[in-house]
Every structure is written in structure tokens, then in C-alpha cells.
Length: 234
Ligand code: ZN
Image 1 (cartoon, rainbow, N blue to C red):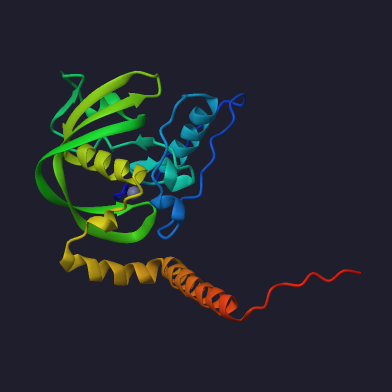
Image 2: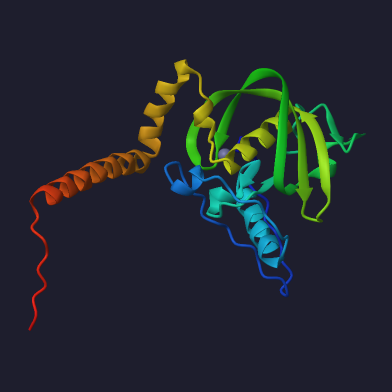
């Protein structure tokens, strides 16, 4: 998920630590964005190194990034809500009051979310749907059970931007995008915008449909006309 953020800060890496890599963010139309992601079973060095790259990628601008957005369909998310956010007025971690600053960056695996409260609109963007923003209705609060990278499982209850971001990022793990949640009034407008910003997604759809139809016609014609194959022998 993304909102406007100031330019990213630079990070210094001691020479004995391999610098994190900025990953390519998959864009709307990529099939991995529509996959149901697998649970993370082991928090090993591969996962931690990949998470470091995800955090570096998110630091370029954004408040949340899910692993499928950078090519791995696994249930791993990093969230970093800016400290300037004032909308998250209620936050509890394991029933204890907390502040966003205490838990950011919030890196976790295998979330289970229970959104609650009334549905409210908010203008959302997504790093995988660049240059497109739309009002999305979501529940105002969530109860989330998350496993942190320490292996500890916690229950977070919150509202505001953090609740919004938790819902947006967890949707990615189900292969869902914010464009799936548009009102009928906004849908056409956003699709027209998407055709301008992500034309390849629509070309691919058209091509794959055309290819499928051509293939079906070819098979039907073959089935009707092709004589049995006779193997030639020397
Ligand atoms: Zn997103």
C-alpha cells in the first residue's frame, strides 16, 4: 500500500553485512499477484534475507509490502506506517495499550484477520498498481493474529491507517487487490485508468483469450480432419 511519503532516507551498511537489494515490484496483470499464498513454515535465513530486501524496497516509498508483490507467493508482510500518522488512535498488542512507534516496522508471517466496525472509505494506492488511486470501503478496525519474525505470535487490535494497511496487505496474500473492492460507480473509471497505466495487463488478457480460442479451433479442426499419423521408417 502506498501514500505520499517524504523521500526515503539512505541506509548505511557495515562492510561485513551484505546490503539489501531493492526488488522489482510486480505490476497489475502479473499472475503471481492473483495467487493464494502459502504459509511460511520456517523463519530461516532465506526468509530473513528476503524480508530485508522487502524492507529496503518499501523504504523507497510506501507503507506496506506483501511478498507476492515482489515475486514470492508466501504469507510474509512488512508494514511501516509513518510516525506522523495520527489516524491510528487505538492500538493494543496482546490486550496491552501500545503506540505504532513501538511496533514499527511491523514484519510478520501467516496473518489471520478479523476486521470489524463500520465500513469507511479511504483513498488507497498500491505499489503494484502505480499511479492509480481510488476510494475503498473497509472496516474501521481489525483484530489480527500475526507471527512476528522472533517466532512470537501476537494479537493486535487497532483502527486507523494501521487497520487499513493490515487489511490491504493481507488481501494480497489471498490474491486480492484493492481494485476488486471498488464501488460500481468507480469501477469503470478505474478500469479506464488502469488501461492507460497498465496496458500490458489488458493486452495479455486479450492475447491469452485469443490464443485459447485459436487453440480450441485448431484442436477441433484437427480432430475432424487429421488422418492418423503414419510413422515413416528408413
Ligand atoms: Zn498493495
